Image 1: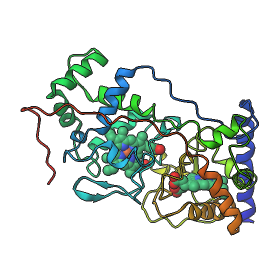
Image 2: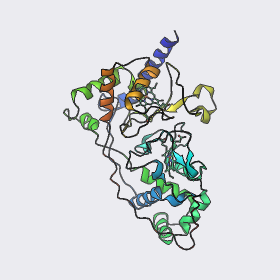
Image 3: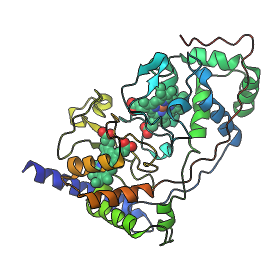
Image 4: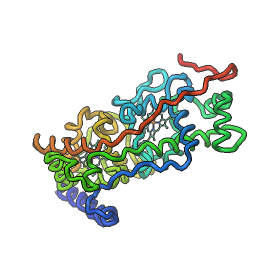
Length: 333
Ligand code: HEC
Ligand code: HEC
């Protein structure tokens, strides 16, 4: 009985997705291609890139955004949970920053409404960069090249945290990954996928994965319960969306992760407990859809998921302006 009701609810999600997202697309597919980023303000993006790579925004002078969202590794740290200030173990897996501008909100529980609101969080989080906004700003304000660059971009006399988060967000908006093989296929190159990958995509649709993983990011556009059909025994204390809404019904609802570049962003789930894509697909089938995939089906879906790896942002490592004599010194220990 219970299972049947849950199937119905997945069906209802499918129907809802069908009505809203799918009908709006020119193609009949539930997933649409990612378009390249349009850079509106190159100077701001360049400044944001420097800040993203600058470890002096942390108390230790050692941890930058890129430490945990390594752009050489799909925008993640590939760890179950991140290492923060003083080698602290983080409570939750670090999601990728790639394509995160497409999400309906930021963080697993959606507690930040957008990238700008998100970017201030880690700097002042004692378990991440362990700093304060005031100190981060005073570091930047002490470095003449930064002051000049902030002035050029924002036209203000003083650096403030608002400018910092706006610039970082502008940089992150450029971190999109178009032109995956799957997107080439969507755009009409029918040779871009082989038979196995195509069989995986067909199964991804018919099994019901697309009820939650759809749109250009193949996710990121709704909060859904982890453990819809069968409960998930999480290894982290995170409660999901209920931490934000206070509603018991939202307990264990998490933002559906984007499956773009999922080949690169292991390990999986908010607690990082699934080490491989095979494991993640198996868990999703059983817990979300009440379906046990056989090894062939599992490997077809995994093959499809690997076609979602797009063109990674082409980043030239920024050279950061040096600290000067008045710059507050890092405190790594
Ligand atoms: C110590 C590791 C660490 C550092 C440093 C760090 N992050 Fe994160 N980041 C995380 C973790 C862990 C999460 C998930 C937290 C959660 O959902 O509760 C996260 C979440 C995010 C998200 C949301 C992604 C999504 O899909 O919801 C963005 C965007 C992000 N970080 C950007 C940044 C930026 C910008 C910086 C630098 C100012 C930064 N992070 C520094 C670990 C880190
Ligand atoms: C009812 C909604 C729903 C359905 C149906 C669903 N998923 Fe998910 N998926 C989620 C949520 C929510 C998460 C995040 C869960 C967590 O981390 O606790 C997730 C996570 C994942 C992840 C891990 C991504 C990461 O970065 O950690 C993969 C891979 C995945 N799903 C694939 C699939 C596949 C394949 C199917 C079909 C067999 C499927 N999902 C069906 C909601 C769904």
